[in-house]
Image 1 (cartoon, rainbow, N blue to C red):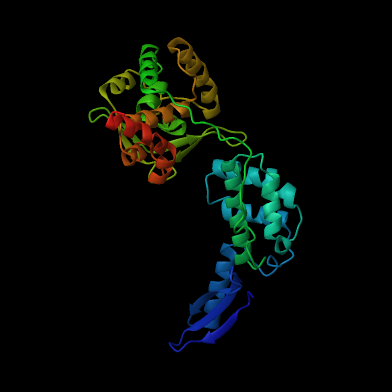
Image 2: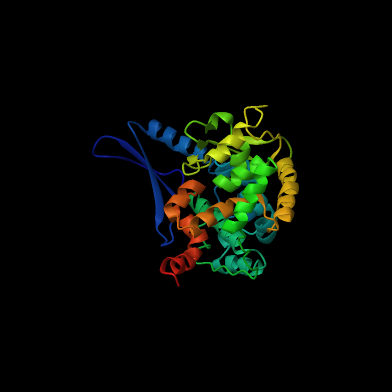
Length: 351
């Protein structure tokens, strides 16, 4: 109940307590507001409700899934994540997968059986996408509970199964990487060379400024990332997403000399007005490199993966690779590169 109950505490303060939801054990979730008067606590309560766009008219158990999905997107996601993330991770997937399935079904009528049936019907999707959809649904129902729209979260304990085979991560080996580096230098493809020698992401490559490179100390600082445009419009520039992504990467003299030879036509090292155009622009030299070096034709992201893979094959520890790659946690790095451990151990013991 959002009107709440008002009591006077022993310390003289006024307490206004409201119920914001029901936990998984069926117990009420309460929130309290304190002040010197009833007026003060009511002002605090109303300010909190406005923050989450919750009013007594909004909160009712018959709200349907699609209506709540739209409200959840606007209130909880639109202004809390990057526009590119909002559009591609949240809005598009809600519109494409969730709303067409659950439609106008009342939120409080959706059961764990319904959620499991949904995921069973989507087994043709990748496991990664299924996990993302589970995260979205889980948060939608948690927020619905906070707002008294439903009493339980039916997403708990759902099982995911995918019939889609995981895509194998491709990478060059050390010999192929050396060929690619030699080709990139010879053909002055210094954007490709930078990825091969630093493992930075495409967005970080596009966001790289001359001021981010210390040629004396031979260090590249990653401070910005450029995302593709949303539907229409130009490139959107951002600071990097996490503290782990903001990092310094040492470079060798060879890369430093190559970068220093580039003309400084703008503040950015690799001047490109549109990240999607850059994707098309880079595909031709990548194919040319593969053909002339007789190596697999990889994407720019796979060249980044090559950087980490070759480091691991050389025996570099996971923690160092994680720092260089800008992963959010060492667990992310281990999940990608730990499969190489057996071969590393084999080499170490001469087996």
